Image 1 (cartoon, rainbow, N blue to C red):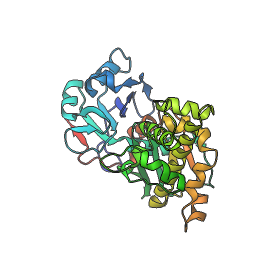
Image 2: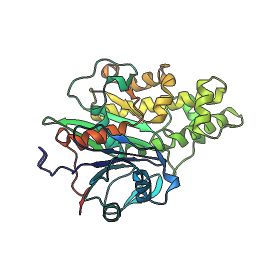
Image 3: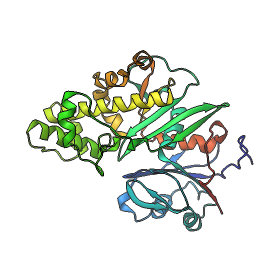
Image 4: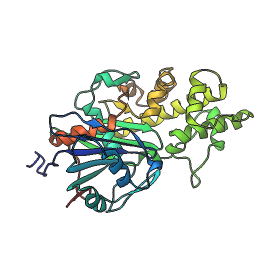
Length: 340
């Protein structure tokens, strides 16, 4: 059976998977009318390979063995061996097909899946962070701090939505205010530069916390993103509070930059566990002020809405929508689809 895009559809049941640097989430879509059956989240560190993780997830499930798979991975998809950016797993679709009995495998970038989720999810899974009404049919952009910083665009074209993956999380990010210039020299660099991921990620939040502590001449007593976030939101540590405020400000600056790149008058969408956990910090005003401070386009920026996607498995929702109705999306599969 052909999709409206002229490409053969995947055969059901379809395994869908969202593989990040730390966690991997899997589900099976039984048929075009079914909701996904979700499996327990697995830790990538607990399995030597992605094939082992999938086999363990499928073991004992009553969903039936999948015939096809759509997997979203954290990193660019090139060639027959696909390394993940922040995880030692290497996705090898040809070996996976043989070992797991899959006749058809599509591998996408993880933030393509997040972009698909923008269309798949309803308003009940969106928390608005200012701005006006989204322009119907206008481009959108999704970004999310996690193990790294993921970025993707979503462009309307001829009645379909085209996800545009990229590695925008590795763009340079720099100081702007006098306080920034005091803090930024102490942020850990990667090969001599500060990319978005060095600030806007879990480890980045810790980098910022340590830098603020050093600039303030105090000891950095917290060691994990969860500790920094909790201390900031509980107002129990001034250094953590300043670090989270700077984090939110840099996230606003970066989100605003990307909104200008894509002219995303359909909205900017923040995704992932970190964004969900820091919603109170995003609503205090610094995020939105930084997002809108883009002269000469500040008036335009004030109208663009920003949302936090609150669905805990947003990427899987996007992959499920693609699996069931591929004709709604212009997903490029050339060089990223393996059939046995």
